[in-house]
Image 1 (cartoon, rainbow, N blue to C red):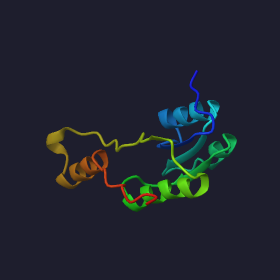
Image 2: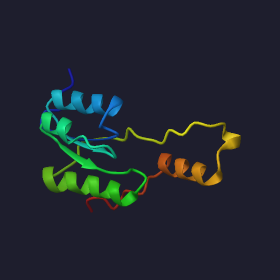
Image 3: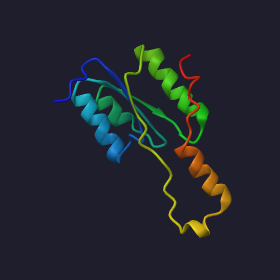
Length: 117
């Protein structure tokens, strides 16, 4: 069994699906969970004794806020699961360039080094 008692876990895309399943598993294993999603997951987070913060991972400031709030409230982040991406479906030859750029930047965004610094 997963032993993460007393750890703080942040999961994005956690209002449903895989992200919610991950958050529930972490909570069941004793972690404090911080859920981040564009959808409201306040009720679910409350059931788990955690916190929901509405964010859009496409907005870097939202991601920084999520991480900083977790650290402000719980002192640290021990586990972080980024479980979110865009899901527009089309043939690559039909995808307009700006959409491709947004999807690429979401998948390769690594500049969160300012979080909690």
